[in-house]
Image (cartoon, rainbow, N blue to C red; front, top):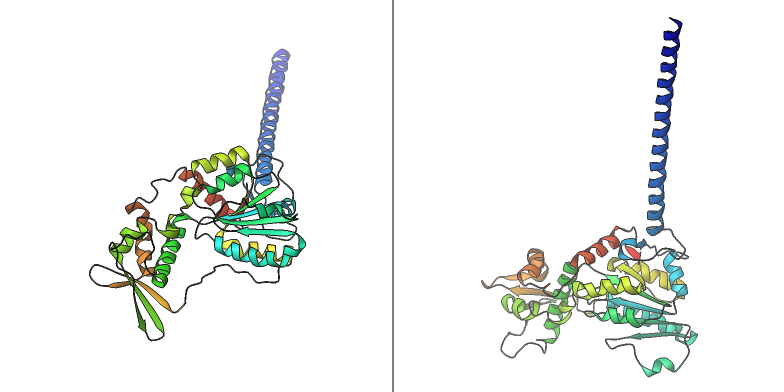
Length: 347
């Protein structure tokens, strides 16, 4: 009948309309999701942007690190422009000596232009700092344990901190070799109790010198007791207290992988017209020396070979991280540094 036909036609129209409405709602929902993810991408791009040249407009934290480059006019270059004081810090065997030598040589050239430099193991509190006005000051310091926290606490808002970062196990291996080479050159360190360790034995082999130290004594008296640079642990420097104070104070903080110090020096060279070449990997030891540990069976093993087999077990066997805290945050920070193209971040 005509009535039935009308009803069927109406139902058909309503069904089509309903499907169109459902499709429209789906399209709107998809558009909303696309906009949401685009906004997330924009936030991430603002936080991690290697080509950024402006100061960040969002709060800084480890989770909001911003990648840096070493280009003229780049983000780090602008940070240096804004800073009245630049602190260059590193735990032992993370490039601190290289930074000190570089900046010291550079500042000798700039001293007459109103720049200032200081280095050493003491705190930066000297009456001589007040004797003359300065355009910009550079301070280089080996950061032992929690010293960096004190710098953050008392520094002005116009201070820039540049810290050279090195993964702890890699740093430990370098520190062990450094301490061994130093012992071969200068004998037993003062920390060694009399009679507890035999002095290194040096012998000449053609144009080379072989230095041999007893393995058991070296491990027990030097490594386990964290002699010399071995004690400058990354995890002790970047403790929970360190991470807390970074979150609380939000200093102008740049973290640079030690492997990128040459690039940092290159930027400073260009910026301050320092007439010198980069000095990364400073090594004052003779190159014609070989260093061995004598095992209990009398075998002599080169220190590099010995570390290749033992380095990743030392921290576990000797419980060398007994005073470490917030290792997860420190590892996350290291991962963020290494994930950036130039291995440098601004927090």
